[in-house]
Image 1 (cartoon, rainbow, N blue to C red):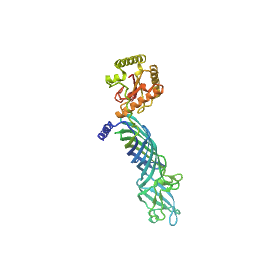
Image 2: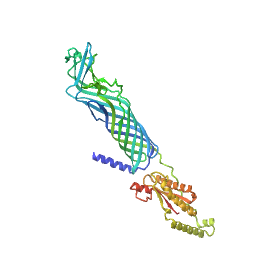
Image 3: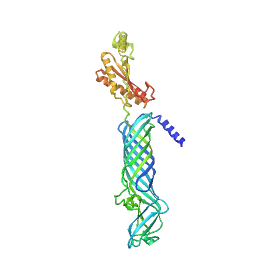
Image 4: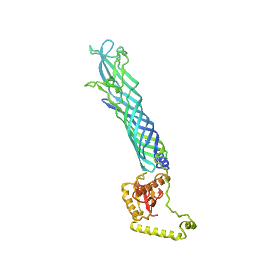
Length: 460
């Protein structure tokens, strides 16, 4: 078993190593689950045993964004329960063909037990949340209600009971009188169908989502389904039958009812139900294989805006045609002026070419704590109206090169848009992206990855 679990774990890591950070808007799933799948009895007498079962289903989840989704589907659920009674006895007045008798029964020689097996179709409506915890792995949690529709329910009874009667006139017992339906031993071994109500369930699950590739993933987690209502069908009168009834029409065959719907008379007091309430409880391991379509975070690639170098690649003759005979001197003078301007700016504000860091994962929105630093750079640009600046966007290591190049460009665009809104000419701001190719720190901790999500400033 240990070797099998180790092989599965290594396989999950190996396959997920090729996955990319992506979330599909639509996920279709197939799942199976197993563990405790039992009935909860509110008992006045007797003992209950935990049952085991499982469920399997098909589902669909719609994701509103990278973290949140809403899922539904249908699942087939099997639940089992058992009741054991070391001693059952009762007496009440009954009527035979000629008179009233005191009808009595009791367990004789061995325990009486009843087993129930329930089959339900559950319809869930689950709110799902997920977030990255490591490369190609996410933590997920889901919570919501389920409605269980009963498909079939059976009860199996086994035991050995004795019955007898008492003459109301003489108080002498009737024994071994088949004509009156009284026997010392009456074996019980039968299966009956049970009538149940809808099951209203509160459901919770949590675990790890393994991303195999951009379309396929595996959820592995724990779940708990807690039944909220009494699922026995019937009113108070219908749930208050005699456990064993005297059959006046066929006295040799007494009528036996399930303890789920029966009552008895304690030594002191009035009639009391064997079971006051019947509900469900399921908990265990759940495996869910999903297939996704239509990635919602796959954006159109924004073209990289190159740094403007209007004279790059032109021949000397072409430059002379544009700028005249003194082209070389003019270009050299422009270069010297630009270098002097850079030196002046850097001397006054060495941090102008620094970075703003800490973008949210998968986001390009500017955070409030970034704005004072950008405002300071805006002030420098206004002080030196001939200065130009280059913005370069960066990301952490997750997802593909193409996706991260696009995300880095969007972060640079966000900074540019803010600086333009503060009065800087858009033609003075160049943008580019490095994606995930030039991390500032190793991408081995969440803090390092946060610092790598940045925009750098350069004087071109």
